[in-house]
Image (cartoon, one colour):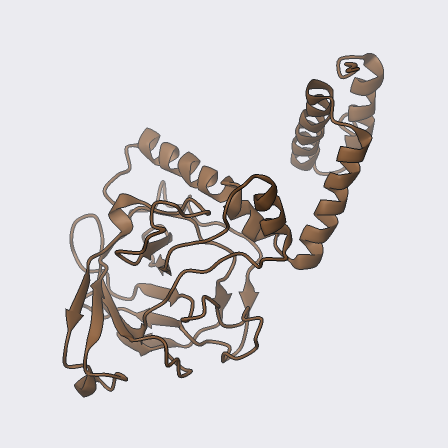
Length: 311
């Protein structure tokens, strides 16, 4: 039988005490957020008649989530990261900002520290017999259409097994395989010479897939390539594009697909002259339009804990 106690003085006093809401010391913003989230949890327990067994199952799940190091992966899988993008899109609309390359989620697999090269970077460090060559190139411009010189374009993606270097459970990849950074010249152009990626799935025994199984959802992503693009005087862009033709483009467990972020894949020849692994290769042109700072500030740069390594 369900009981409701949330509105009682005892519970409201407990919430204030647990978060030290009325105390003069401590972080006021942290208190405000903790009080609200804890209150929402308490009310959900009341409203849904969540049992003690279910509460402790949830706590045990959080322990496993931490042990597996999958909190950022879960944030993508339950739509939290997409929701933050929706809010930033709405904030841009309210400011009248439009016309830039669409943002989409970062995901949990970026690694800082890639060598920055001028204009062109070859990033397939390790051999991958199952993957054909791919060239990704484009021009970085501002909203005025003029090339942006000195923009930093960072790129990272999975190998043909769906694994990212640094996070590869097999340990088979070099630290910066399929990761690179390019500084654009006066023409605003960048180019990455790499291999065709595939999509990936959540670790099957991990906490994220455990929750998705309970929701009867898959944990797979289409083949995609991630980007950071940053430049003085512009807001940092976090985005990714999907590989055209992938069957999961509109069934991405991380909700990252956007119509404007599915560039055409072109079949080309002449790869031998470019020192690619085969003469035939795939070519993707992905042009980037950066948006200006807002009152001199980058209001879309996200500070979060990210992995780093040395070349």
